[in-house]
Amino acid sequence: MQADFNKKSTAHGLKPDNFDGSPAADAIAWLDNFRRIAKLNNWSEELQLNAFPLYLRGIAQAWFITLADDTKGTVTALFDAFRSRFASGPQDWILSQQLSARKHAPNE
Image 1: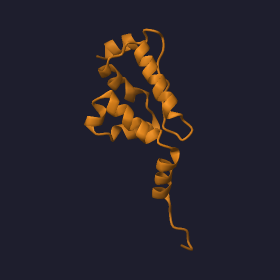
Image 2: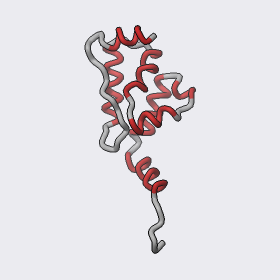
Image 3: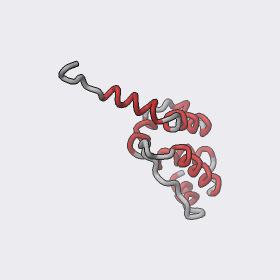
Image 4: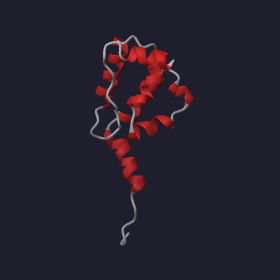
């Protein structure tokens, strides 16, 4: 499988950039680029599912590790979950992270 991936991933010399899940990262553009490269390289659904986490870093990689196997089982479910998490608007998950990291001030 890995040899097949290595052979196909360089068929046109294109590989997706890494996605770190930072607020400045454009999740929709990254996913669109990933899908275009997968299509250009004729990656099967299985190959896309195996390649997807290889291009995730930081927050995005941690998010992927926590996904249910069902979500990781089809590209449709995986891409929908990705969009929901990273392209649903930064305010949702950033506010959630900020709230969980918040500490009481001395006067609170």
